Length: 182
Image 1 (tube, rainbow, N blue to C red):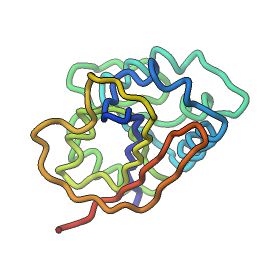
Image 2: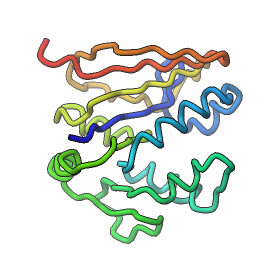
Image 3: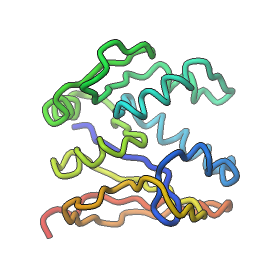
């Protein structure tokens, strides 16, 4: 069975909104290699509408020497949306029933399914028990305001720490899995 892995850029004070505005000074070859390995361990991407629209505007025209852009552009992309029907980014498909469609995707053979950003989607998948791993990449910056990954009022959810990865730039990746019934 495939795993759904959430990967997030988060400030030290928990903000995940607009990481393109505050992460670049901490990006390094180490961080890039980590993100490359993460992407290549997956063979599908699951996105919410807002993230899809941002990625679809940015990624199709990008190229790089490492193959990251080619990989992200060629992978199947599943978009949780009730407002979009015509998706222009290569290999993109709408999913209408998050619970049902994500369960079906997990049952298919293949590599992991990667969820980038997509706050609302993450908050929808979490109580359904459909997330297998959280990779929270914490950047050493305090932003003071902005959207946080986990919505206020979300049910208490126990997580089990499985790994910490630290980079020279000060970025720390905390990897968690659901703790189960605790």
